[in-house]
Image (cartoon, rainbow over the protein chains, first blue to last red):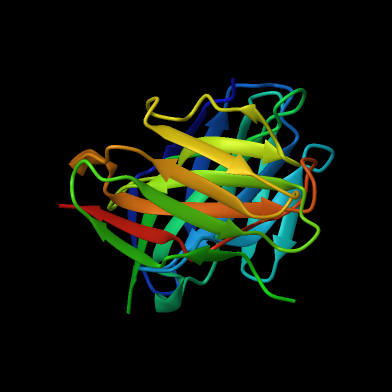
Length: 113
Length: 114
């Protein structure tokens, strides 16, 4: 089955800097890659997703890139703000029989003012 | 419409007791997932439903864990003979289909086994 690895586990940046979180996946047939943000004590919420027919997607300060050949995808946050501080999870959707959503282990992002 | 709803939001139980956790997905969502999140940890996959069928139960930690879904709607996760290591937040998510659509999470049930 699918296995998703995520790095780094923690990331500290200064306000205004950029942050990059990277994930790799094992199943070359996976074709859907969402990113979730989980604030302390709250439920995970989708912030951006990308499908395998697209190499990059942007939404304001957030962008995701996908390299299918290398089986990795990354989240880029520009001009970070303190309210970006949270845990970010990447995920990959299996295709075929099960199609379950497999998550990475999470990255704790801390943006200091 | 309403989002994914889970109940109870908090549950404290004694070791050895059985507990039932409930998930009400968004109406019309055919795919439903259960995850476990230990304190400060990631999202551990438990089980996935497509309609009322569970094609993948591979994440259930032991035979003390079981889940069912009825009417392509409500799902219950049952933990028998709870142990302290079962303490965690149990999150349910639903999506419109098993295809590439957004999964919406409930607020979770925080289970504490004492």
